[in-house]
Amino acid sequence: MTTVFLFAMLFALLVIGVPIAIALGLSATLTILFFGQDSLASLTIKFFQAMQENYTLLAIPFFVLAGNFMTTGGVARRMILFAVACVGHLPGGLAIASVLACMLFAAVSGSSPATVVAIGSIVIAGMVKTGYTRNFAAGTICNAGTLGILIPPSIVMVVYAAATESSVGRLFMAGIIPGLLLGGMLMGAILIAAIYLKLPREPWPGFWPATELVVASARDALWGLLLIMIVLGGIYGGVMTPTEAAAVAAVYAFFAATFIYRDMGPLSGQPLFEPGVRTPARNGYYSVVYGLLLFFVLLVVRYFGAFGFSTYTAAAIGAVGGGVYLVAREGAGAPAAFGKGLPILGLALWQTASRLPVALVHADTRRTLVNSGRVTIMLLFIIADAFLFSHVLTTEQIPQEIARQIAAAGLDWWQFLIVVNVILLIAGNFMEPSSIILILAPILFPIALQLEIDPIHLGVIMVVNMEIGMVTPPVGLNLFVTSGVTGMSVAQVTRAALPWLMILLAFLVIVTYVPIISLWLPNLLFGPS
Image 1 (tube, rainbow, N blue to C red):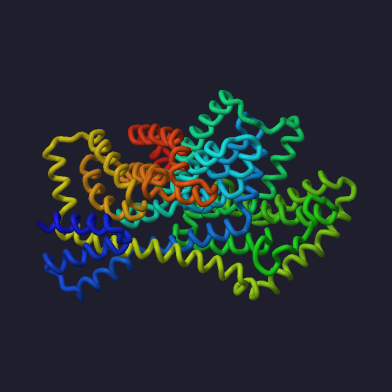
Image 2: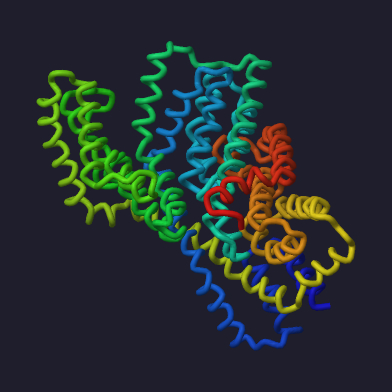
């Protein structure tokens, strides 16, 4: 009776349009009042203890903030130019580059809607201008944007880790190969469609001009791509916990957007150099920057134990690397260029130090903080009420009873995963990913353990199902975001996304029944779970 009342209240509240967070909390509270043995006072204490013990949840606001700084700071545009330089010459090159850009931006944002907004707002209009249909462009970005919750760092993975007490580091590593595989499948499908439909491609400029373009665009996007190394390298190397890595990522993203790219804050519109003009002073400046960057990379490599060189050796290698770059650019004029670059480096450092207090309270920074706060409050409100709902489930022994029923039915692991996928695909049509994870993970997790299914593998399966839910009506977030970006109706976006949805479903089957795709990398780095 208690279980029936709990879920009947939840579904009734959702049907009449009550927000998911309120529906979770209200249904759980009413169930406790009518059927439970706990007082509301004791429940409040348990509620705060549950939130306090989930230290991992602190990563969510920091990852959200880092993603917003990167979105505001123009990193998406630079990643798109890098992706176009790499694959734009292929048939359907701009569409393929859009998927690649989504993969790169997913690795700094952790959010699917943010990826669709950042990449789609720039690329979709460009695709239409170059000869793609609006439906093709919208469908491609809508589905490629789902990579935002699969490729680490993923906010949904952090939520799953908090709900099941799993390792965030293992989950992040488990998402890398599936994310690359799904991106490859989408790009392969675009290539086949482009050949069949004779879609436009960028002209091939020749090997050396193309290589120079790739190098130049990679150099421009370097500071955004470094965020990926900071997060994953810090976690894998044991230097930082996922929460600490998220905090470092937020601080780094602020400095990169404000003082390196200068796309926001007090230095916005005041570049150190005129764009596209390469001078001896600029080459001298970048020789110092690249030398220092190489030095710090070598220190990180040494920390991981890959090489046993000293700090002085790393400094010498960094100096030589910067010198080689400068000689390659300036030849005999390298010493003079180096001398001209040092004052500019001093100017950049002085501007950073003197403008930092202003940057912290600048309108762009405040706007980014407010937007991040709104998203964080929404997510944590859902999570808090989901913990309350989960407490009722645990008190009523609902997961254990379902596990007993499945054991009595004699389901094998592969049959259970079919049931899991069907339940998650249905839920994904009506609920937000974090809510689904927090409601169903505590139920499915103990059953998976009983059937000897790896919890990390189950986590990846749930995330992939959440990806599909992001592009299926009536509440697929990516559909609404793409509609806002393109001006198309949600129904039109749904039809445009449908062909690509078939690829996501095929990918779900592969990930579900080939667990090595998810487990090989975390087992290699951390050992078997």
